[in-house]
Length: 86
Image (cartoon, rainbow, N blue to C red; front, top):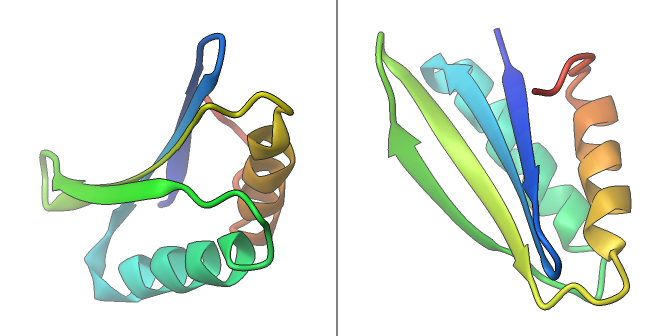
């Protein structure tokens, strides 16, 4: 199951997407690459291992004065069919 968590401050936004297994991992990574490549503003991304064989891909936008990241995060979540974000 793919799930997400969002954090935001004044000029900083972060979306963390947790997934399990190679199939979900490939889906998450390819979706994020495809969507973020369409936009002028580019994120920093990294992955981390979490418990129970799950991993998390973190997408961070810094100095996002125009709040473009919100639109990008919404598109990512819609494409991955994520209906709940903590």
